[in-house]
Amino acid sequence: MPTGTASNYFANRDDLLTQAGGRIYERLQPDEATMELSLKGPRDQGRTVELMRELVARITAYDIGYLALLELRLEATRRAALRAVLTERIRADVEANVRYHLESGLPGDATMVKLLYLAMNWLIVERLTLPDVFSPEESEELVTRAVERLMPSS
Amino acid sequence: MPTGTASNYFANRDDLLTQAGGRIYERLQPDEATMELSLKGPRDQGRTVELMRELVARITAYDIGYLALLELRLEATRRAALRAVLTERIRADVEANVRYHLESGLPGDATMVKLLYLAMNWLIVERLTLPDVFSPEESEELVTRAVERLMPSS
Image (cartoon, rainbow over all chains, first blue to last red):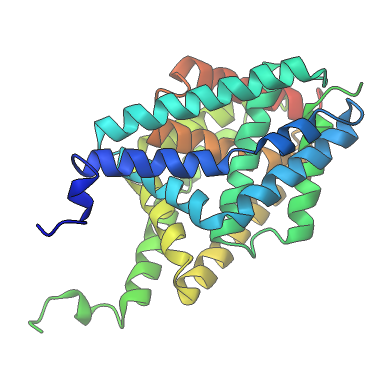
């Protein structure tokens, strides 16, 4: 194989997919400025709605990355090594979200964070794959209602 | 092309994918007996938790169909005709779920149905693609909590 091909950089296809997944995953994370900003402002539902809308907008804007992760999840059903890496990653991410929320002083427990995680992820899938199922307005409305109904009012 | 190939049955690839999607979608729907049974029993959170667990279990058991629909959604990002058909289908399904719920006498409004739709779909994605992120027990727990927190107590 000529030099410069993928075989020089990745031991095998699992390794390539795993590293690609890791890189995409990193880019989907908020940067430090975003994290710091999210700790500012009142600790209530209204502020959380803002943060959730920003989150959904940020991830939706990086559509190619989010869709690639979805492809990797499908690939993981056929590749145990990839599944193990993605599982580790997503589990750590869910746990970090829970910990971060509990430390933020915002109302709501670990279960609330997980339920928001579930609802927001599928909302992003809808927006990216079949954008006319829920209009942008209805999506924003669903984000607002999800927070209002799942987060205890402070 | 020899007789008996897909070209005899489908005008083109869009047509094939669209029809395949339609068939899978039909098989994911509950049968009449399931629908009738779901109208029995008390009209409260406890019964709804049971129904939601059955729904998640039924769809998860037909994993190959649900994962194929997810592949079709990804394909739809590149094929406008497929996107149009799937959009129509999913939108009708969401509306039918809302109507069915409002007529069932169970508590909760259209927004609640949509938020449960979002959360349950991603829970199924987790179960089917990375089953160790949430254990079966935690999944059941999340279904219960989603209903308890989103559905008004009757």
